[in-house]
Image (cartoon, rainbow, N blue to C red; front, side):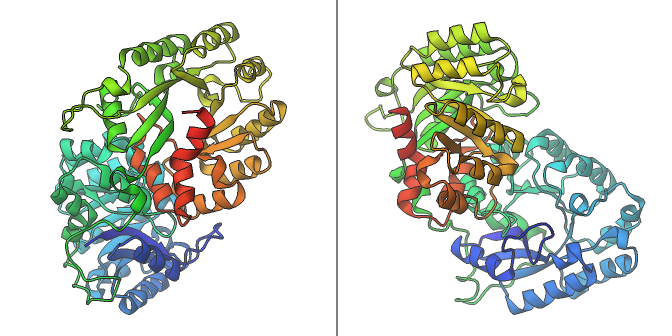
Length: 529
């Protein structure tokens, strides 16, 4: 049984997308998810009491759904009475939205409810996205020594804080929504235990595909995958979900099994990763950043070509970082010579690594010299510009001499693109250099729709997909506006897990031919692999 602990339904303020109950049920069915804990959005934005009643009614009509309650502490009236009645009314969890509703768990209006919540004993889920760090510590301090389960979503950028919380309060958990760091599930398993990871997708807002593909490719036993997909969440509920009759919710309850995602299975899919890195990331606990780890990850995801830039070159010294990439590329033997003891013949077509030259418009002489030297080598394929770190946008006057050289050399530039300002700068740069191929790394991040608008009528702009964001409809809209031909797969290794972006593609409702173009064909054509 696959049990999703993180879903919602209903109207969402400032969001015109379809978040209806019907959309949620469609997503669950098409992704092979048997059961889901869910909560009405009416309880988030309107009356929490009416929202909770709506949740109970909907779950009674759809037995594949299990009711989750919510309360808004600032409403004051009925909060305590509502909490005291939740368990006997059949709710399985209580969910809070402090960031969305504009309150904090340290507020007195919430603290007055803590005794009632502890006595209620239901699991508490905090929906706070990347803002989780102010939530984890005070909640662990409050409930430490009790048996109250605490579930925190989107802990990736606060992974160390979450691991410490698990040690202090063993009943601390996270779900797979936005659990996107490289091998993050394995890190949690190794440090505190696999039982701390639950399956959650935040459907219908986000796609289940990234969560499913990350679990599918993780180096977990089948038993461990089963626990993540459903067993761990079911064990937290006050009573186990009743078995579904055949035909309700898609299939009868049983052992967890992955839905059919053909492109995500085995060697059938070929992948080219055009956005990866060599080196670790300061402040994030990840031991999987060596070149050996990177090669192993590429093999697991069937990545045939992987294009790297230096993390230290981006964040510290471009010249030194570029030299490190040159050295590591020179140290890795050609694919045909790499031994793979798991194969009978001892050799397989292991991934071919390629380098980007990190450029910094503030140091034009050094950047120009390295570009001309390294881009003359066969294993360097383009340049990387990171405006957030270097402080220069793609269209900055200081960047233009570097882009002119790339035009002369016939090499593309991959640019970190997050938020409107960087997207608009990329559009201006594309107009200034119509013969230059510019790749919008992360395709705008939160402002991916701005990236689509900028790229729509600029044929020299390509969009690269990787990020920790997987909103439903993102890829479908991208194909509709820009076309599959200008979309490229990237993983953001060694920061992100390739499964997260892979699932964005394999789980999208687009054609199989378009998926293969995005994962492999477009990059092969663009880079000439």
